[in-house]
Image (tube, rainbow, N blue to C red; front, side, top):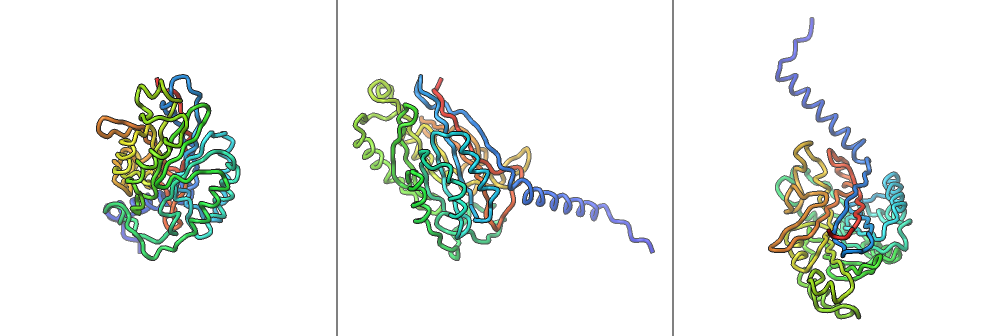
Amino acid sequence: MSPRPLTPAARIAIAIGAAGAAAFAWGSLVERTRWTLRRADVPVLPAGAEPVRVLHLSDLHMAPWQRDKQEWVRSLAALEPDLIVDTGDNLGHERGLDGIRRAFEPFAGIPGVFVNGSNDYFGPALKNPFSYFGGPSGIVKRAKRLDIGALHAYFAELGWRDLDNTATSLDLRGTHFEFFGVDDPHRGYDRLDLITAAIDELRADDPLGDELWPDAASAVAERRPTVTVGVAHAPYQRVLNSFVNHGAQLMLAGHTHGGQVCVPGFGALVTNCDIPRQQVKGLSVWRHGLRTAYLNVSAGLGTSIYAPVRFACPPEATLLTLVPAA
C-alpha cells in the first residue's frame, strides 16, 4: 500500500521545520564561533593629535573549556592597541576566570579600563528565551554568585582601572583622556549621582586641569587636549543621557549581544534594554538635548552556556581608531 501523499499544509510545515533546524544548526555550530573583528574610525581627537587604537571587548561569558575563543582573543594582542576597554560580562561559569586569564594574558601592560556586567556577579541560569520579547530580562534569584573579587584582582594585575561608579584619567599618545563609568545598569547597580563628584574630584587632582568642560572652546586653548569617554555594561537610555550631559564625546557599552538572533534585512528582534533597536550594535551617534556623542555597542564575543546560538549576528570584538575631528 503506497503512502498517502502529503497535503500542501504538511509540506509547508515540514519545510519550515527543516529551515528552523538548519538555522539552529548554523547558529549553534558555526556562527556562534565565527569570531569577527569590526573596525571603525571615530573622529573625537583634537586637531593634530596622533591616532589612538582602542580595543573594545565585551560579553565573553567565558567558560574554562572554550579554548578556541581564548586563543582568538589572545591573537588580538597583535593589533597593538593603545587601550583596552572591557564592558563586562566576562564570566560565564564559576571557573570562567581560568579562561579569562588565558585569553587576556597577552594584554598585560597595555592600559585598560573596565566595568562590571551582571554576569561578573552571577553565573548563568536557564531562562525562557521568549521572555526577552516582553522586555529586559529579570533577576534570577537562583543564579550562583561568582568571585568578582578575584576577577577584579586579576584586572589589577593587568594594570586595568575599575570605572564602576567612578572616574579616572590616562594620557595616550599625547592626548589626555578622562574616563567615567557605572556599575551594571541592568541590575540597577549604576550610581549616576556619583559621577559628577567623581569627575570634579578627578579634575581637582589634575595639576594641568581647570573647571571647564573638555568640549568648551576656551578649554581647548587653555588646557591640554582632552577627550571624555563614558563606559557602561548595559546601554540604558538613562545612562547614555547622563553620560552626554556630563560631557562624554564617546561612549562604549555591551550587554545586548547585538540581538544575538537577528533576521537578515531586519536586524535584532530584542535588545534586552531600552536602547532603540537600530542602535543595538555598532557605532552610531547618540543625541540628547543639544549634545551628541559617539556610541559603540559591542555585539560581544559570547553567549550564555544555556543559549549557545547566534544567527545573523556573529560574535565580535571592535578596534576603534580614534582620529582628529574634521
